[in-house]
Image (cartoon, rainbow, N blue to C red; front, side, top):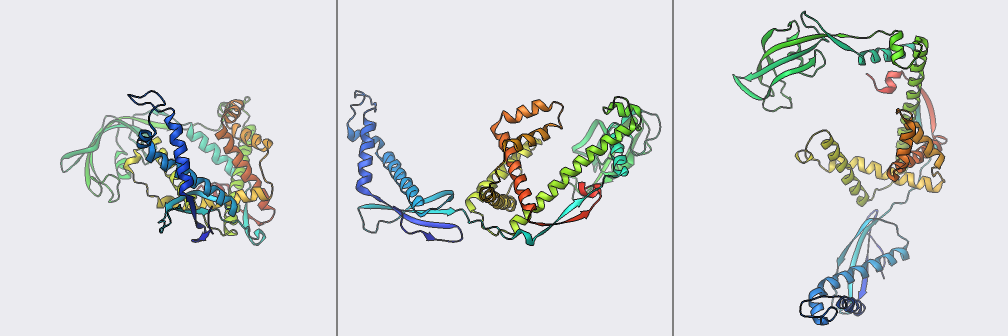
Length: 434
């Protein structure tokens, strides 16, 4: 059985486990006898291989397995006896027997979960954004919708900003070509910033069929090290030129946006409702972020290193998956664990706090809440019913919805205790639009 628990720090603990050598040897002998009954070896009938040979074949592995099993069994019993909640996995190290040939002594080092003691939330204040959707916000949204529906038509004139062009180009440095310096049938909108500003500005004034030579000095911090800070001479031919045609806010636009009779008043009312719905979501997100920070600020606790390291590994894997999804090779991009440590600690601490609150105040999500969250997400898709079924078909997706419902319950509970003050902001400020 484990001896007295030694405190090595805020969460790290250690105790010794003793295993009787005689009892362990009896277990090893029993296991070898069971193995001998099924062992097959050339020259012997099945199950008739001498125990001595079986011991030579499997003895070392059986001894290690039996010792590991005995240590884990004693560890579990000791943990139960001392009423300890283990975070991560223990580390076992065999100690010197100090002349005692009757037993093995193994040291078990591990971390425990911290005690979560929530502070006084009423001493904290958060700001509730207050937004009134204006006619100007609706106008901006309509303007954005129109720009998204821009079409381009051919023109025969000099190019100007916002035109779309198709070009061939060839760049040289001191008369020599370089990797990535040549392009054919390349399309770009002047002023969009797809190319360097000086390059795009040099195309203004050109007409279809024109060719032009000009120099561009690349910035010192340009991502391509071979051409950063250097002067590149470009030979460019403008193949075709198109000007943008932006639709106006009229009956046809309204019809294309789902207003059957093309009523512009209905169109504006529909946009206002969409914006107000987005405002409501964004305010809820802002409140949630502030509540979570208040919970962290009012609940000082250590995060177990074992859990933090597991979360770092998960975050690093997510980052690698994201890079590969963008067409990059994650192996070529070094990801240091330190980059993820702060976020990992934040998540682990918050997770421990939320878990304690849910347990202590019975904030568990109901099936109705989970259903409501899934249906709300589904509304933004063309076929909501299929999206709902898709969520319920996967336990992982269902757990994500349950986690959101739990967070909502915690936020609602906390908002009843935290002081709140309204802060008037514009729609753009709430959305982070500069």
